[in-house]
Image 1 (cartoon, helix red, strand yellow):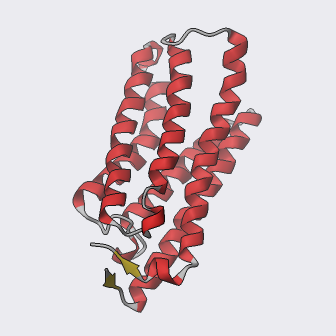
Image 2 (image 1 turned 90 degrees about the vertical axis):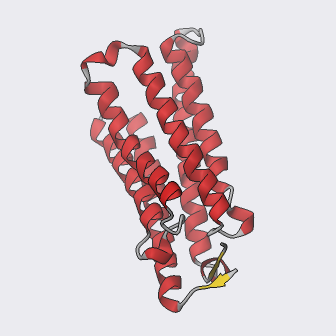
Amino acid sequence: MIDVDADGTRARRTTWIVGGVLFITAAFFWLAAQAAPYPVLGWASIVLLSGGMAVFALGLGRSGSVTVRRPLGTAALLGLAVWNAAAPVLVHFVPATGDPMLTVTSEVVGLALAIVAVTQIARIGVLPPAWRWAPLWALVAVVAARMILTGFMTGAITASQELLVGLSPLMAILTAAAECFVGVVAIVLATRRDAVTVFGR
């Protein structure tokens, strides 16, 4: 374990609080978008979530980065942030939007980037041991929700229209809950001195 200086501790605490707030706000915007016919809410949620990922990846100061700015983990998390914002644009505005494979490909690319990112976060060990796999827990919940919904929407999984209508809000709630979970964990850890003053290899 390596001690970090006061500036490093401050950078980590600020990074985790700002990133956590962005994740939680994104989750609330996402839920609001499901209930209100205003596309801007959905886009705001996407931008906030991507912003939160970028903050966690780069840190507000080098010591704030959850990947210590190591190339693989940082690139994967930044790539996920960019893809999270770019994929909806591709799916909704590219002429090939009628092709279900575009949606599936979007999910697969996002999943690959997310797996690399959360694995690197856990391996690098910036987070306390008990919470190093917290991003993975959230990822599993989000992936499960999106894959199930994508399966129904693309016809890979057959279901009645009534079931699809009922599942959509449930999947949205699960996704928002996962984002909120990551945000709350980040903010709570930022308030713990033992969590922000040391980090692993």
